[in-house]
Structures are given as structure tokens and as C-alpha cells.
Image (cartoon, rainbow over all chains, first blue to last red; front, top):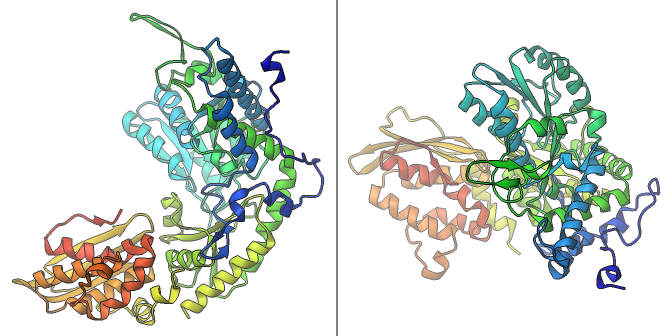
Length: 427
Length: 150
């Protein structure tokens, strides 16, 4: 038996793989996340800043460590043992992402740095080829800066116009207004799946149907959606879908752009370099096939492997179990936090995931954040990289608690107590 | 563990709720804006400079308790002072909130502003405490653009 054959498969599944549909035991899940065991300011850490980034389970940390300890090599070119093995692991991670998103083919999965790079890639390739002077790009009023600025850069360069579909006071997309903004000049539509500042789940299925009537492609920003919802890009029929690994329990610096292969094939490359070519002469370069055409240079191999492990972890718990747990938690948090005198919730859409944005009397969110931090509670305060959302509500900032699969009702109780402490300080 | 009460002293909370000299200054001949894009804090500082001395000073804007109280107490402490004196108070205030005054003990001219000593235990809040001061500095130098603490 060769060394290769003896090599054990990576331990990237949870030690006890869960039966999908089995009861979700959050206390058991918490043991998988070493960072949650620590104390902060002499208090038990209550991590409620998951929309910024999620914590990593041991299996993800192990996968990255094992890669560097055992498998590190450059991929796609070496004939040696380690290179072959690293390539297998990297491409295995791509297949994990493919099935995670229910994409038709693994070649439609492009590894990028994160959702931001995915959007920039589409704006700079599909956008620069297809958007011209007088054309329009349509987004919504609840986009993260990363789904605004790349389109602004494109529109400025091309003399095109960025149109913005409005949202209601509860933070829901006004679909009629959205539909009115679609027209013969609309060349691409980019919408968030879940708003990072408000938690709103947008009706992407209906949006895509509506937009496709005009044969216009749709990019969906799924950075805040994939940790909370089962995503099926074929059922949605979206043309592009992006997400970041670090928000779904994977490492930073790795993310995914899904694109329909017909679109990706027709697009020019994003960056030039090694790995994205099939042959180079000084006269002409033939680009590589998908997905490599869009992966110039040595990719973040360890990151992709870590993301693959994160997806296996999430699959092991079952996305339906996770969604149900988080839904119950958000409902409990919404009920208990809004019962505190002086609380105003920002973002009260019917369909929400993961996020509770709030204001407390006239107390600045920054002060709320500092006081909660002293209680060991990590939340985000500020404009959440969504300044137009703040402007829409006439505020400068909010305090935002955001939830993940490992959060508990006890942690929500701690948040409520923390907010009471804020009220005492400012009484 | 830093003490919240050291940061949110009564005087600070009181000034944040009822800021002094909180108005546009009709006689202002200098003004500057301070903006912290991280948290959205935004203040305008108005100055009525007569020669080298601050005849009147006021401010307006929005921000957290620390930034607002700091702006309010700044206007109180600098009214009637010369530019040189104001610069010196700012330097001492900056040393105070960044914890440097603990080593050099240079806070003779701070007076009531000494209540901001608790800020030094909260490094991320230093920008809040100094925002209006940076705007003041720009206003005295006659700069027009918005000062950012990022």
C-alpha cells in the first residue's frame, strides 16, 4: 500500500454527524467553537456580531492547519504528490460549494476573496462589456456599500445611470416601484438576498422572475443569506450569486462567485496571470476554461479548503435545523428587546434573518456598544457599511445584534440585561 | 477591567444631555467641521476670533455622549483664551485621553476637562473625545475642509 492510499481522509466532518431533522442541541454545537469558551472583560463572551463575521468551528481550524502541516503545495501544475493532493482538496472544496448552492456544474463556482470581489468581478467584466452610455444599472436602497460602489465606478466610467429601488418604513423592497424602474435601458440588476443592516429577506425569486421578463441578468448578493437560508441558485434562476466564506463559518479572504456558465464563458477575464491561461505567446494568449479563466494567480488554497470544511460542517448540522433555531432566536430577541422602554427597532420586515438593529432613546449606538462590551457582549454599532440605509431612516447609526447557529436564548437574555445597564448609566 | 463610571462620569453625561454653547454663532469668523465616518459623529465648531484671542466659541452637530460632552466642555474652557493657550490645552487634553499624562503629569491647564481621564482605558473612544478639538484646530488655522478622525 502506498503512502497516499494510507492517508486518512480529512477530518472535516463534525465528530458526530447530525441526522438532518434531529433535534438541534445548541449547547452541543457551542463545544465545536473554541473561541466561545473565553471570557471578555471578566465576563462570559456573548458574541452577537455574526453579520460582521462568524466564529470558526474546530473542524475548519483543523482543516486549515492540516493543509499547512501536511498538504501545502501549489495546485494545478505540480506532478508531485503534494501538489496532486492539494489540487484534489482545492477542487473538492469547489464541489462542496457547488452542492451547497445547488449549482449545475462545479465550473460555475469561481473562488474569489469575498462577496465584494465577486461583485467587482461581474461589474468589471460583464458590466464593462454590456453597459454603455445611457444604460442603467438597478440596485435597491438596502444594499451594502459593496453592492453600490462597484456599480457606481462602472456607471461613472461608462456614462451610465445607477437607479435605486426604494424601500418601505419597515425595510421592505417596494416591488411596484422596483418594477417601474426596470426598462429597456436596464442592463443588469444587483440585489441583496438579506440586508446586513436591517435583516430583511428580499423576495429574490419574484425579483428574478420580474427582471428576466426583460432578459436582464440578476446578481444576488448572498453574503448575509448563506449562513441562514438554504440557497438553490438553479431554483432561483439567478445569473450571478456571491457570498463570503467568513460569514458562513469559513476563513476570511475566500469567497465565491457563482455564474451561469453561458454568461461566464462570454465574459472577458477579470485579472490576467498564471493559471487563467491555456497558452501564452507574446502575440496572443488563449484563456483557460471555466472556472480557471477567472482565477489568475495562486489562489487562496487553504481558504478554499477551510470553506469546504465549513460547508461540510453546516451540512452536517442541517441548514433547516440551523434556520429553525435562528428563526426562533430572532423572534425571541425581537420580542424581549422591543419590550424594553425606549427601544426603536430599525428593520421590521415580515421576513427577516439574523439581524436585530435598534436604537435606544437618544443614546448614541457607540455608547451602547461600549457599555455592552464591558458586559462581554459583542455587537456592531455604526452605519454597517450601508450609509444610504441610515439616510433612508434619517439616522446616523444603529446598534446591531446579529445571530448565528451557536447563539442561545440565554445570550439574548444577557443582551436584554446589558441594554438595561445602558439605560441605568444614562438614566 | 476599565470602569464604565470612569468613562461615563456624571459631568460628562450631564454635558451630553444639555450641551453648552450649542448653537450657530452669528459673529463667527472661523468655522470647521469634524466628521468621524466610522460612527457618523459630525460637529461644526464656530469661532469668533479677535486677533489672537477666542472672543466666542460654539458648536452644533450630533455624536455620542463622549464626543458631545467633549465639544461642550471644550467651548466652556476655551472662551477668552488665546490661540496659543487653546493649542496647549488641546495638547494636554490629547495626552490625557491617550494616557500619556500619566507618565508626564502635564495637565496643569485642563481644569474640569480632567474628567475625561477615563477615556484612556477605552482606546477606540479617543477619536470621539478629540473630534471637536480637531475641528477647532482646523478652524483656528482657517481650513475649510472637513476634518476626519479616520
